[in-house]
Image (cartoon, rainbow, N blue to C red; front, side, top):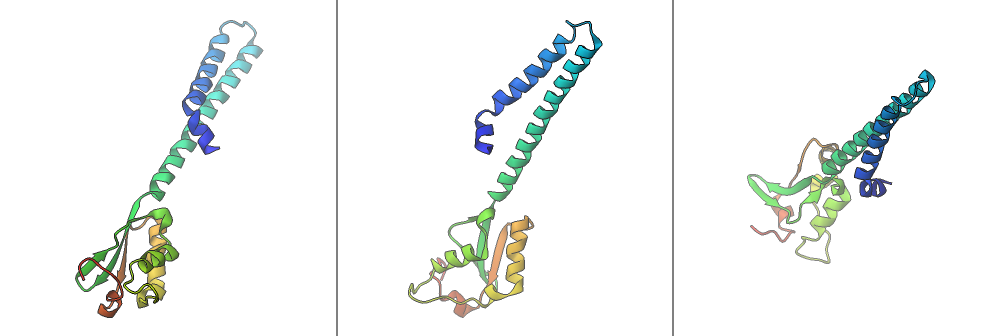
Length: 155
């Protein structure tokens, strides 16, 4: 439905506003108050629908923009920071996606990696903060041994 509306958005607005304006104009052609009241009622309803469509489209655009924000994932050890090569979109930033991206950076492909912080409630809280829009950076503290598992540019 959203793609259909997007394709014909300007036409829908134009038709709604034009129809409402024509109905208002038609009220001057009729002498009966009942017909005038009916035409004005229909016109005001068409204007209301146009405003509703505009509000729905605006909120949909805002939500899409929010979900497309870039999130940076950083491995940290003390003052050292290692930014993951590919940023995530907010909509993609889940625990599974972060673990998958970290898994692609391992030195030894046959072995699993281990980072103690990834199993903590603090990590889950940070992922939830990103989903809620509180933050745009996911920082993962690591020990020197944990960092050594990955093929990092500054190692």
